[in-house]
Amino acid sequence: MTITITAFERSPDGGKGLARDTRVRWALEEVGQPYEVRGVSFRAMKEPAHLALHPFGQIPTYEEGELALFETGAIVFHIAQRHPGLLPDDANARARAITWMFAALSTVEPPILDLVTVKLVEGDKPWAKERLPLVQERIRARLDQLSARLGSAEWLDGAFSAGDLMMVSVLLRLRPSGMLNDYPTLAAYVARGEARPAYRRGFDAQRAFNTGTPRTET
Ligand SMILES: N[C@@H](CCC(=O)N[C@@H](CS)C(=O)NCC(=O)O)C(=O)O
Image 1 (cartoon, helix red, strand yellow):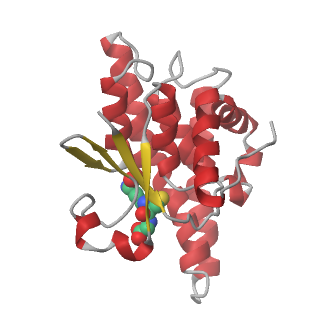
Image 2 (spheres, helix red, strand yellow; image 1 turned 120 degrees about the vertical axis):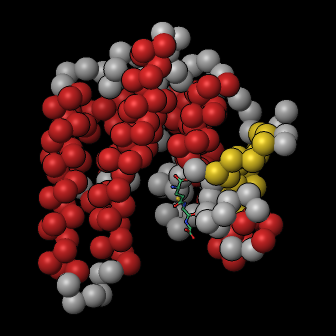
């Protein structure tokens, strides 16, 4: 059955891989599932046809036969459950990998999204300068804790899993801020994620989609 995901017709980041279709592409590449991509404009995202797929008028969505999903957590979880490669067989290890997916999305990602909001959306507000250090402090608290937990391990809990895919995807959104540079352990963890052939295929595909130019550097 054909899998179709949606992505920005033209991503605001110009193909840097920060739009959330990248994590879905990465998951599909990890499990070796082919997929098609339908570009959606900002206007079309808020129109009934897309709202029927995504009640909040966002990307990405995931369609497979009769099934339509939204929310990257649910989409990646679905892919990981359907196909081998992203979740361990052992029931407890599987539960822990799923826990890391939730941790990435509900504990680590929110302050990182706040940073984007305070810089890009609220940057002209009179209180933005005061708010910025508070948001940065909340991010640092999470990065300190995550870095301590990861320690010298390659991945968060044994073998690479959907938990790592989601955590690396979330941390990647910090790259433009330079904050990851203060956390060599996490920077190396993110680099390991990016070095995975499946990530590179997903990244290159979104870049080509957004720019028409595949990445050439290695
Ligand atoms: N929690 C959602 C967030 C989806 C989201 O914020 N998508 C962004 C692109 S990365 C979007 O569609 N932004 C346009 C908008 O909200 O109008 C998920 O993980 O899928």
